[in-house]
Length: 324
Image (cartoon, rainbow, N blue to C red; front, side, top):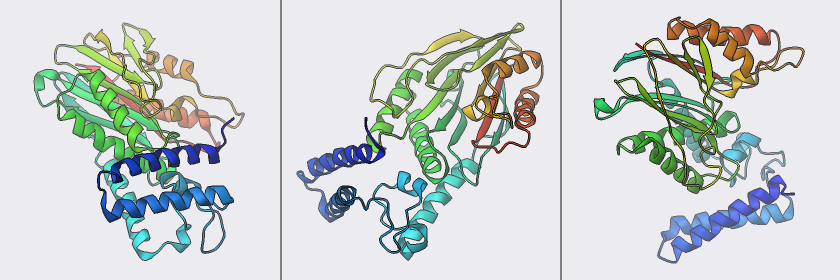
């Protein structure tokens, strides 16, 4: 059975092979230095000193080590340059989350609202809504959840945001959009880093295309019935697969699609009971006919009431999209 140390070693060896391949074609001093850093990390793994600060001997913060497997010092012993670089990374992640789409949107025959509650200053939940370059292609909505929490998850969230925004500019079909995002994530992150993601395209005519990459099942509320839409592919970055399915649906005026992250369904109360998908389905069924803003707000409030005094352990995001 693989241990965290052997998984890190395997990933570092993979990246070492890729670096050597690039260097054979001329990579310059910067890549030479990076190769030496990878070799140093592999030596620390062999000696048992990996993850230990070289200045004070204390463990390096796990989320920092997850974000940067080459880290050699804890936060208290970063150089001024390293501290500035980390601050810039966190600032970028924070600015991405501050630039989320408006919490209320009405566009191209659709009404959208969401509630977003990060666990800390930054989070790994990701939501976005973008009008396609050709308005006839409709509104593209995405909701995702990065594996892990804290600094590492927030940095990867910013990376996913940038990748998807760039790919959207090429006007790709939904399945190709997720396929290419998956390839980028696989090639640029460690194997234990991945993201569940729902990408949906809402057309002005009322049709919906949806690709669910291992995310919580979206809930379609139509005529008093709530239908779960299961995954059409694996999480982004987990495996370098090429096949992602897309489900095509038609939404009538008043129908609502509810997207959420697992911070909702996996919330636990003081009795260690899980909130669960069934409770959420019953709630959104009861909310049929309400405005999207009311649906999102009520869902988050119900999770909070269920949790009570129990400690919150994850980010919470709920998005509701209704056909006007």
